[in-house]
Length: 425
Image (cartoon, rainbow, N blue to C red):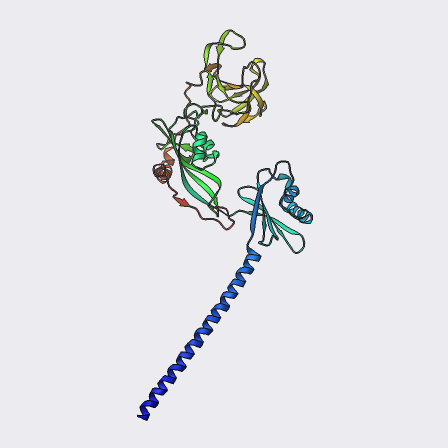
């Protein structure tokens, strides 16, 4: 009996020791965890104080210099002077442009950490305070290139439709250039027209668009007619757009001397009543009603043979093209070309005005072939050469890659970002 009692007592004592040991272990574990959490909190607090930067951004004001712009962020006079001096060594501050963003970063305690000026989509001027003064350098902004599909439908204009799709008007301008040989984007677009664009987008790390790259394929549906374009190259290796069956979209001339928004106010006529001279006489051109200052483009490549004032025609530019064609641009408010200059198709040669015999601002555009004036609205424009037989296999590969994306719009590819931060091709 005594032996049994002793065994029980021993077991109880052993159990008590085990319980006390476990309790001690748990207490130590809790203490260690608490200590660890305190260390983590201290480290996080230190990280917040030393690493977290709270940015404040403003656009570079028009007519102000860099130093004055920094003063608007509350920098001290010595900070402004030292930061400006450092910045000038890294970048010519006379090249700063109004509207570009300046961002000043401070710690949570308000201490100045950095200053950034966005030079362009690819570069930023980075300024950092040092123990003495500031350091500055021009940095490349890391981006990646993605191939995306943009789609939209017109309610009134291509410009607005592109903006409604969340994209820049630049896309509308480039679409108009691609299809400008077949479509006059003043008169042809109608409500319900649709477009799809396969385009390269360069994006920042946060996903916002930095810039647009090449348009690889595009589609515009105008009423019941579909226009498509695929980026390829001409026989000389230059970028050019072709239809899916290999026909060149580029023609000798564009379909309009203006890009957007100008209606035809007077048509080509052999006998038109002149509103100022009050008599009937030939009107050998097409009048486009547009505000003063609207850019005027040459419809084809050629050489300027006249650029100046000419009586009732006002300020005029006369360009000679190949195959006996000549074009005339009348009543301009400003002229940007000179006699003898070689101009490429689509170049801005002047601005709409109302100089000479004009009752209101408009462009009187005229075209002649071998000395005979033609009705530009009905004139057929010969195309460039189609894709050659030796390039057809290469073109077929391009067509098979991008054409399906015009039917199924979606993001399809992302190119790798190079070490320098510039997207690879």
